[in-house]
Structures are given as C-alpha cells and as structure tokens.
Image 1 (cartoon, rainbow, N blue to C red):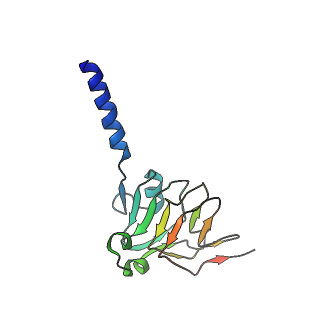
Image 2: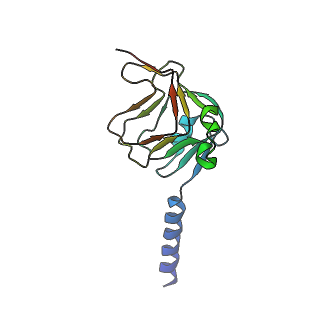
Image 3: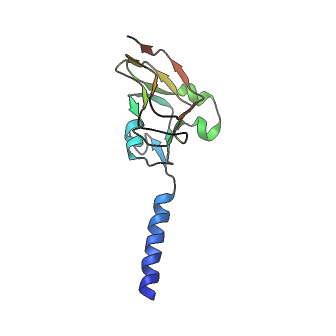
Length: 142
C-alpha cells in the first residue's frame, strides 16, 4: 500500500509541476524573443522588456501570450517602447501552425517587415488575438 501511495504522489507532483504557466522574461531569461518562444509551452507568457529587438519571430504553433509590460501594467507607453524590428529581412511575426485564440500578440510595435505576401504580421490557418499593437513601416510586395 505505501508503494502505491508514493507512486501516485510522484505522478501527481510531476503533473502539477508541468501544468503551471510560466512567465519567460526577455532579455533576462533569453536574449531574443524567438528563443523565449522556443522555450515556451502552451499557456506561457513571454514578457518583453522595453527596447528594440531586431528579429523575425514565429510562434511555431505555441499558444502563448507575447507582449510588453503593457500586459502587466496597462501603461500604453510600453507599446511604443517595445519594438520588434524585422530589419527588412522578412515577416516580423508569423502565425502559421494552427495557433488558436489562446495565442496572443499584445502591446508591441511591429516595424520594418518586408515580404511578398505579408510583411508585419503573417497569419495562415491560425486565429490568434492581435491587440493593442502599433504596426507600421512594413512593406508587402508582389
């Protein structure tokens, strides 16, 4: 009887440990937003500190929240202070692996995307929430 109790207890602890959402801070936990996304699991939040991040990011099917300190404070000045700059090297943000409404992009400025079909935010077969962002100076061309 005690062995069964111990085994059940260990299983429950492992299940509970893996079910809590995590807040991943950029750049404290990971230097880039994409590294934070890659390390995330569904339900996590990737919280980006003010600054300019020159990168192109892809959610890769992760149903996570990605945003600036606007998420935690409601202070709209963080939207302008937290920038993802695509450096004219492709789409800035991509959703294309079936992300659902639990995926969210909020409180960021998205700039300098350049791509054929979509430059700032590309969304295919996905339905994320995109709210309270500034999306500007992106160029789609044919």
